[in-house]
Length: 367
Image 1 (cartoon, rainbow, N blue to C red):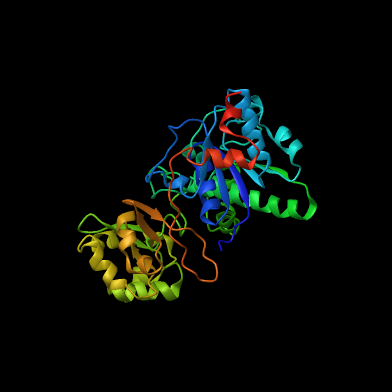
Image 2 (cartoon, rainbow, N blue to C red):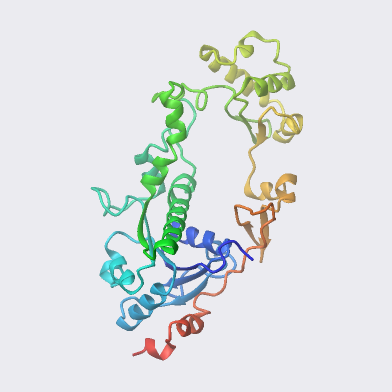
């Protein structure tokens, strides 16, 4: 039995973080029904974010299709959408209408800027949201432009995961009180909230606004170095006990500049020295040197390489299904390895079944 079995979620087709959130619910066992706008929606083995979902195609410009969508959504525990503010209301599928039919319904809304505020109606993408929230500020080497990881900090972490947390919290409350909620998950809010760990360090004086001056973005012992073969190695021994192991493995444990770990004036010279050292051997030789130690060193891997890594393979983090690489569901429960992801079915293939559950048929859509 999957952990969210019995939870019914309806997802209105959107882009990026909305489908990812729906996939997360499906991975954990929820019954996720995707209301797609056309048969051209992502489908087949490569539609990773649609795995495990049922789907139906509805033309939301037709009153009969809007009525069907409203019935399907109102029969769920939660519905999620990722359209611009006001779009669902104009379609006749806003939270006031759907929750009038089911007060327990949780209506999850995911946008970049949020449902209100000066920017709420403006277009944007992940890179804009994390730039505005401050979450992209420290993403880059000293003296270089900030380069946030594509989609991960904003769309996925600040958006999809916060929407999932908000929906699940509201579902728990609805089961206790009988009253659902409208969840306003904004990527700027979520990505800003994730900054609180760094803001704790900042409050203690350890993370100034000037980039390249802290242990996390300026120190030689926390960064990525290029190797002889063009590969890269990540280095992160922040604590002295790990740093000493790192120096010992490199034969640098007697060099004064390196021993004074937190002496910021030495960091640039130490970083330059480490770069010259790592440039002498291929990435995997360095990885082998540090393997099994507490030096906090690891190779930077592509997804294909990561899937083959012994640790990842033992935990079966990645799976290849129909020739497409998937990451398995997360997190795990009771230490069990997640089952293989459910298949990505053709869009609209469960339409009859979905309609029947709310007392409708295909003929009703033609009315």
